[in-house]
Amino acid sequence: MDITLYTRRDCPLCDEAKKAIHAAGLTATEVDIDRDPELQRKFTNDVPVIYIDGLEAFRHRVTTEQFAPFLLAREKCVPCRGGVPPLKGSELAAIRRELGGEWQVVNEHHLEKEFRFKNFAEALAFTNRIGAIAEEQGHHPDIYLAWGKVRVTIWTHAIDGLTRSDFVLAAKIDAERRRV
Image (cartoon, rainbow, N blue to C red; front, top):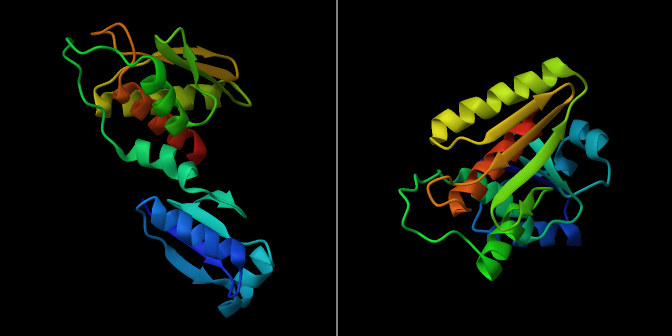
């Protein structure tokens, strides 16, 4: 994960952002916008700004917890062979907070989220990108494609419930959506 932090000298919010990045166990390339007139025009006093993998992720305030979905997306899905209990209760709630976003946990059984697009072609392209991620991870969601929307449903079929890998896949899908 490539993190760039745009800052200014003597900026308390910038100092808080640095602490949050460090507390999340991450490192960032720090860029002082006061050293570059072009960056000063781009950001003015609107810092800190944090880019992750070339995309703006945060502006002004950021907490350590807000990095959790990005960390989750870096993990790899682990194949489930069965024989393990599905996530339930407080354990399920804790990983749901890590994921963030608008994913719904339905009946402690599966994750579901609907993504909106301007047209069918964009929705189809996103569906294909999800398919590529699923193949790479060896973890395959149910995908419903319609004009301007894609609904994704994820659970681990081997245990008929949720595992950490389901949340990892959801985080990867969210990361892909941020890229478009």
